[in-house]
Each structure stands twice: as C-alpha cells, then as structure tokens.
Length: 309
Ligand code: PMP
Image 1 (cartoon, rainbow, N blue to C red):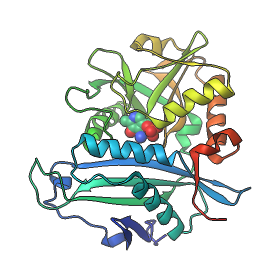
Image 2 (cartoon, rainbow, N blue to C red):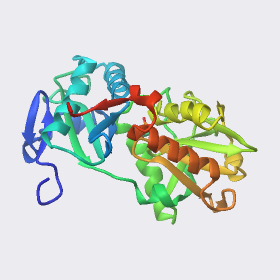
Image 3 (cartoon, rainbow, N blue to C red):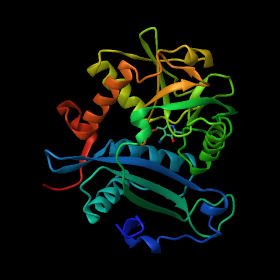
C-alpha cells in the first residue's frame, strides 16, 4: 500500500503498473459515455490454510464476459484472462487479509457513441473486511426513483452507467435520513437496492424477487439460495414482492459481494420484525461467511486459491 491508502500496483491490460500510471484520456468513450462494465469480487483470507481464496471467481469472470458481449465490445477476453489477472494482482501485492477487487473492462481511444473498441481491462485490489452496517443493520426507504428496466437499460449488465440510477436513489434516501434504499420496478414490485439484492422472510417463508424483476443476476443471491436449502434446510422462493409485504415481513436483508448479508431493520420507518437482526438472517450470514472463507468442504469448488502453498 502507498501512504495515501492506494495499492502500489494495479493490473492494466497484461501487466502490473504503478497506481498513479493507470489513467485514461478525457475523450475516451469510457469517460464520455460511461462505457465501462465491471465486477466486484471478494477474496477471503483463511488463517488455518494460510491461503487467500477468491470467491466464485469463475462466475464473476463469466458475468463480466456476458456484460462485454451485451455491450457489443469488439474484443471478447477469454474467461481465464480475467481470472489470472486477479490472481496475479493479489500475488503481486502479497495480500494476506480479506480483499475486494474491482475488475473493469472499458472502451479507450477517442471513438464516438457507436465505438466498440479498443477494449481494455484493469483490476484494482483493496483490503476490505466486514462493513460495519453489515453487522448492525440498516434503516432503508422505498425509493421514489424507479429501477432501470430491461427494455431501456438492462440491470443484468453490470455497467457503470447503471449506477446513476442507484446513486439517485441512494443519495435521496440519505438526504431524507435513511441509510439506504430499495427500488421498485416499473410494475411497482420490489426490485433491488443500489448495490445489492433483497430477500425477505414472511410467515417462515424466504422469498427473493426473480431475475426478471429488474435486478442484477447476483452471485451472492444464488449462493444464498443454495446454502439456505442445504445448510439451513429452508428453500428460497423466487417470486414478485409487493412493497407492503416488506413492511409486514419478519426479516428483510440485502445481499451482495460487498454487502455480504446486511440486515434491514426498518423500511419507511416500519420496523422489520422486532427491529433487530432476525434469526434466519443471522444464521444465513454466518453460513455464508463460513462457506466463503472455506470452512465447508462441499463448497470448496467455489474457492480459487491465490497462492501455490
Ligand atoms: N445488485 C446490484 C445493483 C449490485 O451492484 C450488486 C453488487 N454487485 C448486486 C445486486 C449483488 O450482486 P453480487 O452478489 O453478484 O455481488
């Protein structure tokens, strides 16, 4: 790490470059039109194994490739190129703690709106432990901003430009005294948060909106659906959710690579359950963190070791 908290090196195209040298020009489609797709990936340090594990690396590489294809970028990287960039980066930085990588594919050059290249890739890694709010829980609103839609700006593409929608809702919520917000889609059904998916438990049934509700196809969401069934013996149902169902739910939480499992304590000032962290949320969070750190043998297939021990 440099003295101002930035990593010494980032991965750019095919090699490590010093942090300050990883720059693009103001006339790139990346700057002019927000032509950038990305992934947020976590790596968990396992003290017993003395190993750093990237969590669901292949799934992140696949989704990044899918975003590039949907944006019609003219150079499609091999999945392995993405994965090996991240491994080399963490090795180069000799990381021995929980890390978060932001891997980006973007358009360089000075092309216009229809430019499809030149395509470049970068990855930046920073230490990242648990979010404090992930432990304590959030007070959220239902946003008056509507979630972007597959007919105009598909949330399925993890494009930087999509985050304008998330940012408008998040900042409005924070100005109004909330920690965060949940978006409804055009049909008025629950979509997702600004950077996380939503789950609720109502009458002992766990539910999450389907991937057609205007959400990112979250890797954490699919992880939780699987481990809820296997570890907690509770299947998660995918179905549309009404706003007032959230008000009357027993438990609600956000999930995502960054958010992990983040309890929601109130929605539009309606207390969720008894206002504390719910039992299912607590157990699912614990199971998730154990799986991600490598405590469950049957889920080792989701882990990619960084070091050759
Ligand atoms: N929705 C949005 C809008 C997000 O930004 C994220 C974070 N990537 C998620 C959901 C959760 O996705 P994942 O579990 O793949 O990180």
